[in-house]
Length: 165
Image: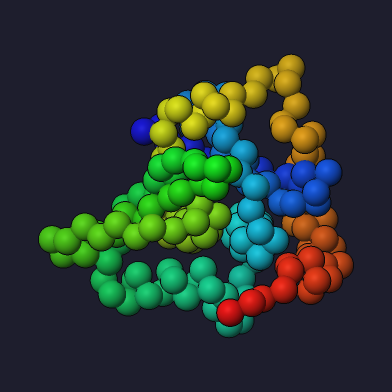
């Protein structure tokens, strides 16, 4: 496993979908993961140090972990199948290790809040190796929190599709 950090957030210009770009801590390889707007907002707000008067979902998860006297030891981005990435939260509580299946975007948002390291399989970085001569797939551009806020404010509820139970 290779330790990675959040390098930046980007927007896919073709689909207007947010992307979190992970970069290996000791190198240049990256792993772009297309994520939802809510998760992009949660990551951006934490990176920008924005705090709300009431806890948001990822803040709630943080408080639950702390309240259960557990510790988030690490987040693992474990694989990809049919363009869907998989991740695990590894919690330690007393003598127990608890592995929780989660989406990478949620896992990253929680890891940032708790200061936990994020790791990925080397093969995932190799699949998405991008050097300085190659743009990110679909030419995303780095965004700042203000741009993300504007993007989120202009979303139409129809952009999320219809819910069918």
